[in-house]
Amino acid sequence: MGLVTRRFPFGLRWLGASFWRLEHAFERARAAGRVEDDARIRIFVVMLCFGLGFGVLAIGATQAALFSGAARHAVTGWTPPQARADLVDREGRLLAADLLHFGLYVDPAEVWDLEATRVALARALPEVDAERLERALSGERRTFLVGGMTPVEKAALHRLGLPGISFEPEQQRVYPLNHTASHLIGFADTGGQGLAGAELALNDDIRSLAGGGGEVALSIDLRVQGALEDELRKAAQAYGPKGAVGIVAHVHTGEILGLASYPDFDPNEASAATADQRLNRAASSVFEMGSTFKAFTVAIGLDTGVATMASTFDAREPYQLGYRKISDFHASRKVLSLVEVFQHSSNIGTARLAVGVGPERLSRYFTDLGLTTAAAVELKESASPLTPKVWNQDAVASTSFGHGMNVSPLALTRAMLPLLNGGKMIPLTVRRQAPGYRPEGKQVLSETTSAQMLQIMRANVTGGSGGKADAAGLSVGGKTGTGEKYDPAIRRYNDKRQVSSFAAVFPSDGPLENDRYFVLILLDEPHGSPETFGYSTGGWVAAPATGALISRIAPFLGISRHIGPLEHQPRLASAPTILAEAR
Image: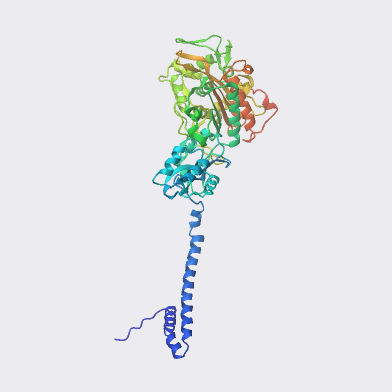
């Protein structure tokens, strides 16, 4: 049996031979009388091994830093579990952010001079209760004393050089614009959980994007929001309502470009605000909306064919319906056309139209328009309406002009969109949508009806109850609303307690698919003034604020003024002609 010879790779054989020669270098050096050469060789070999080892480590570290992706994960720094992503408006302007703050801790075992520490902390932290400070200094364990300290405040305390005092980083949610859009943005708790507004509605997205440099964009435009809040505040100061609401929405996308509830609050100090200040009246409160509901009744009458643009309604005498007698606030005492019913806000004409539509069809349309359910929007505060228990003729007559049914301002907004966008029922949203976004929606009204309503609402501003909402060159349309509130004390409606509003659209001209915006201003229990001759109805107190707001926000929305022929009162044509002109 022959000898088995193992063959090794050339590199290994060369390395083995080199180590073998080094191993016998000492013997060769002694034999040659050069012992010091052996020491030099051994030092060289050790240095070479160390150099190779450190070189390998350096290469590995460089590769990990540059190519492993660790740098991408580390760039955001410390990310606590309660962290939340930034909130921005539709143009990327900051609305809410997490900022690094610090918590102050006291360890009594590490404190050198108890009295000096007590005096120094009391002087530096006057907001801390003396009893709380004493418990922290005299306790047996390390204790949290105060949180939310800014880096500047932390540095000032750190410079005192107090033994036993330490700091730990913590994230704090900050709202840099204070009261602006407070009800839409909402607020979060110290544990990183959203409690109200978009902070609650979009909580999962906001938390999942934290730490990665992401942000959540809301639908509002801060320029629109600022103008809305300013005009709403002016109206509130002028007429002293107990509350007020303002909404601006895109009729084709459902995006809420502005939402205001008065009074407001500072989400940085949410716990210090009263329940009334934190109440989002746009979403959480329900009201009898009064004559704004006449827009729905007229649209339903047109859509069902019960009425046409040529229809007339006898308003010479109050309308007797069973035990009820329905009258007009400003009686015209004449036969009114459909458009005149809208312009004069005639309860008599609207009730007659609704009775012609009938309970079954009217209730079905109200359901299709979303008036019998909470507004479809991300906000958790969206309130359910109060609707008639039985849809009989009495309920039909009452709801036709906005009595006997309570809905939220957001629900009214959503129901108005199909009247203005070609008949499609779409959800409202507080999320920014991509340019060109057009959601799919159920067709609840015909395009012809929508085109007719745009022209009828315009006629109401140029020649009806909504004249004070007009804005030169912007083709504003709309409907006034004044709903009396039921007073339990007197067991009937109280004409001294009203909900006054104006629901507007602009521009009301042009093709149906053009960008178009809905605006709602609502004042809860306003008071008349000398300038309004004591009146506190929607046409006197809400319409002027609406017109002023539209004038201010039109440039932000890219709506140009057209001064000239378009400013004249529109000619009310037949339905096919209206649709052709609108397109």
